[in-house]
Length: 268
Length: 40
Image 1 (spheres, one colour):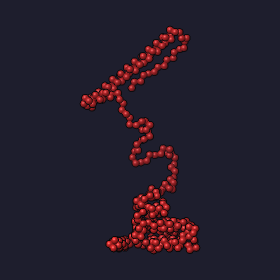
Image 2 (tube, chains in turn yellow, green; image 1 turned 120 degrees about the vertical axis):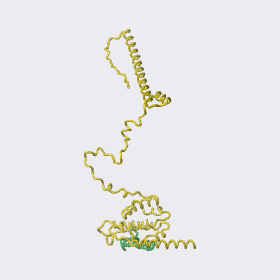
Image 3 (tube, chains in turn red, orange; image 1 turned 60 degrees about the vertical axis):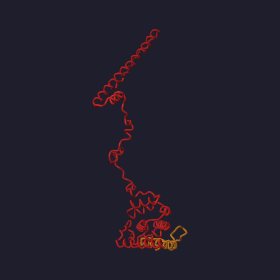
Image 4 (tube, chains in turn yellow, cyan; image 1 turned 90 degrees about the vertical axis):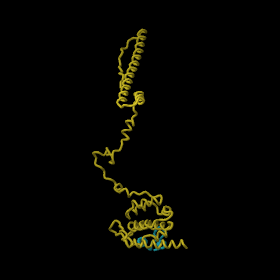
């Protein structure tokens, strides 16, 4: 690129006579004319060089005449940059799956993460809005009675009949019962004020559970197996063992009996 | 069902007989009615 040089001249101040003023005006006009001529000459040279480069580029690419003509006609056009300098610095593309380092923390010891941050992501539950929402979280994230119990605490018990408008699956009822027994209800002889408040919540939950539609059918199909071992005062929370095979067989037999009863009822 | 029965047993243990139901405490009679609703 050709940039015209600007030359500043210090003209000494003298008394201006009419002839000197006229001469100075003529000289300024001639300087302006010279400057414009210089600009035109620079533009001509620049355009000539751009056209020549475009021609050489077109010959090198071995394009047809139409393409050659387009390249020559657009030789003076500049390519559009994909983004500005500022946006390039801001919208820097994320490289890989490693989080970028926080620069202000460099050189200083990293603070200990808070207790809430140490919890895994699956323990941060949002209250469900529909039964599908509840079942999705219940099946995917609530694998233990503790997580089930935490998830049950994310919503009010009186929303249960609204969540499960049609019915509740027997497996969900079994999971709720296991979670309540393992985490909510205190062992024998250890009922304090906190346990009493928890028991009130459990009682409210059980009260609204039985208001769900077709609860009798859910109850009939629920697990009839042995209860979980009760929580001891010294351990954190009880963990339910998996259901025994004979309990599963009994469950299947109950389900078959109920299905036969339903078929008889429909036939009648 | 047995798990639910154990839950009700624990609830009845938590609800002492001398605690009334009018103050929002667990009521033994209401708990018995609720237990019947669960066929236990």
